[in-house]
Image 1 (cartoon, rainbow, N blue to C red):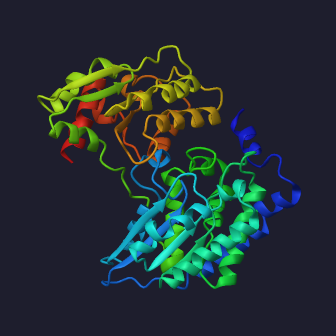
Image 2 (tube, rainbow, N blue to C red):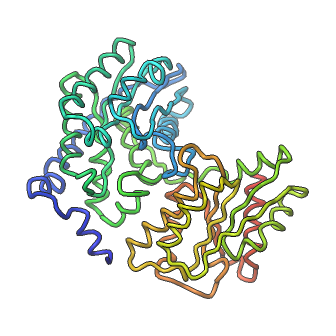
Image 3 (tube, helix red, strand yellow):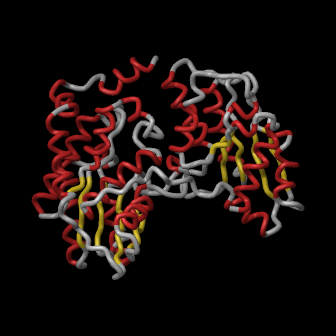
Length: 415
């Protein structure tokens, strides 16, 4: 499948009314609603401490698809402090994978109301649409609002992110559940953040750009979470905040913690770095105990590396993974390249909150004279995963691959 066929497939199988809704008036109305709500601040920020709790499912929670360290709630706190410098505001992440509004209600007291939040954002639907009747979803949203209000907390209901159409989560049904959320917010008189409209606007402008904001068919990567955080920031404060300048979190936090405890560090590395990573790390941390496990990749296609990563990494539970997909690991299309490359990174991370480190090395480090049509995609994909990419620059023209990686690791170890 080439890029054109993939883009056609995003909306293939949609009924005409649903397709019209997806591509037309209702979305633009939703964007207008989002802009209107953005003019009415929901939370006054200042020196008085304020707490926001984001309640939701795996898109809200911190999981592999955003690098395992932050998602839109963590980005929302950054955005709120950008538009209100010095504001004493904290955002608490209360998202759990697989959860519906039913689960959200069951843990509302423990995970949300016990934090005494000034504002609760509620984002459900991606799991509800396949498990709960529409009316039950509506009633659960209303009950969540009622219980938050009884605890003197403001509430904002939010639509989901946009997704790629699949049989498990067909877009027409997702739109139906998002519309229930919007109407429920109006019915009970709470603000509504049309996250879907903000995300969908990217797709309308450039569908390939939209694809690159997703880690898989339904989960946004960090670029997608930036869209969600900005939409929430606008809806809460009436102001926009750019998140384009965010750098990934430090690359060696777990590795450094093991070094400081004088514990062995287990490294899983793709070629050619499996041969040098041990001595490289010893230069970065003299006296460190390093165990290197080679990740064989010779002769494998990119989809085969994806499957190999799934079987290999989480079972091993390493302390550091060095991902170095070579140009020889071919894909048959742009979409296959993106999907498989993303899943090599996804499977190279722990499922939930980060348990080990991972860094990605661009093929130009080991092969500076080669080139491939997908080379330019790699920085975007790695940044979207909230990971660091090691690249060869003009100043590294004569440097060996091991020296480039060593310099990167030293910077990370001392940053």
